[in-house]
Length: 352
Image 1: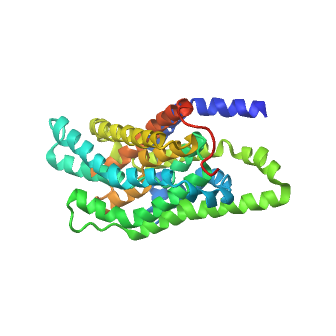
Image 2: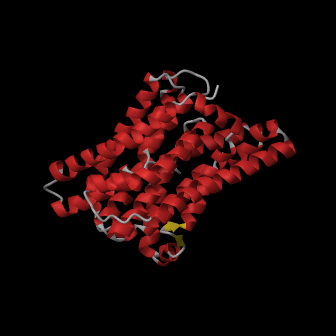
Image 3: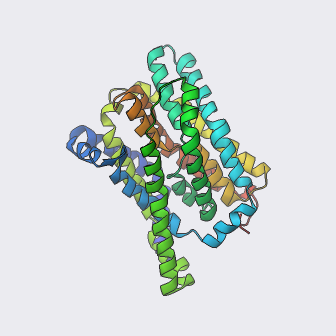
């Protein structure tokens, strides 16, 4: 067991390196083996890549197995963490994204970007800001040892709100009167990225505990999947960057310029939710995922909607792709910050 833990520690210690290598590998595949992303792009349902959906299942399935529904029943006794998530995600995040992105794209970088390009880049940034994370947050929650039951409830309620709030917020911020957001993408995303892996995790947990007992499940079985989440994340990055190579390569400078406001926004939203959780005296295992879910983005949805509205090679689609480029290394940095500041919060689980 000690050897396994050592291997896992080594693997996660250099996760940022593996992330960048996978990004590079994806771009190289898209550049020199274009038939691969072309084939993968045909495997879609309502704009959602089935291969990526499968990899997301691989990422969050181990997290779902950890969910004890006795704990889920107790979440309602401590709703402060949910309130932090809702307020930050829907009353603050979309509007700060619009403000920060507008300031940099139209003021700071006006000598490098035309107003027309800035407008489309802003559209992509707004799509990211109006789509808080519903899938990758399980990865960040796992890396920060967040409460699995609480994370599931945070994501589930977030999914319900996104169905109602996403379109009005995008229309309001962009002033677009005829935005046609694919509802099929929204509903199928929720089903594929939350319902399916949750059902699989519940079935596995119940079945294994029934057959082998609680101790075997928690001490042995669950640890067989310790590296699966990270592997799923890395393979997902390879596929995303392979499919977006033709958008990324022609715009190296603009990628950097777009990344600046997106990165600032990510840090701002995380610390806002994180410190709000501290002020409300929430335990660490609620505060960490509360910060992560707001800072991270539902980039699968943002990219799909940008492509549907503006086209595959549009500046808006590029901006949403830059969101993927910046999110993973920035979120890994926030994971380290959260783990390093765990002592700021009280011990104990939120469901107790």
